[in-house]
Length: 249
Image 1 (cartoon, rainbow, N blue to C red):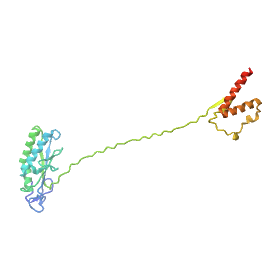
Image 2: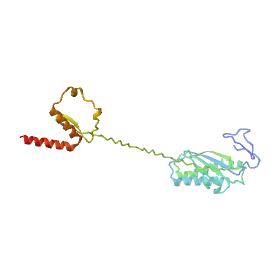
Image 3: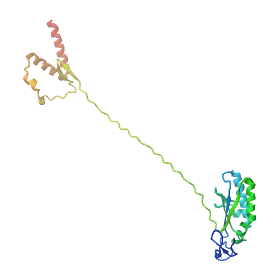
């Protein structure tokens, strides 16, 4: 059902009395000279067509719409504004705009595009491309006065993040000072080069205070202390001891 000339409806579905209202400003109900055309395709093998077949189907729809609207192919554009083109979605919906219509009203465009002859033309041209064995048919067709505004293609940007692990290695240097000790005649002697002398503050052990050293041992201890203070007297003392022993024999 189509509204009478000079009136249009913005309701979808079947028309009822009162749905048709006068167009703003009267005239052909195409104030911008543009109209949007939507066609439903049933059982359309969208994923089964190669790029060449899809291009042929689009071209056949462009020719059919332009012929029905009494305009040239360049006046039929897809939703992105590409001339002589229509947009076909994966769910089988064809969308297109007819631009700069001046010789026909919205009511006349609707009457032509809703006709059975237009449906038959689209059906036959499409089956010739996709194959007659396909269970394909033309569904609902709608015409809507609408000024054309091109859609902007969207793109998805992917950002990758890299994580860099920085390992810090700390080296701790440990210095160990070792003192060499030697034993002479059962007494412990500290290396004279690393020894800290503090004789005045040293306190003899109780055992040493109670014992009375013999004259020979006092001489020996004195020589030992002197020897431990410097390596050269130690060597001289050992040499003399060895020499006196040899002479005594």
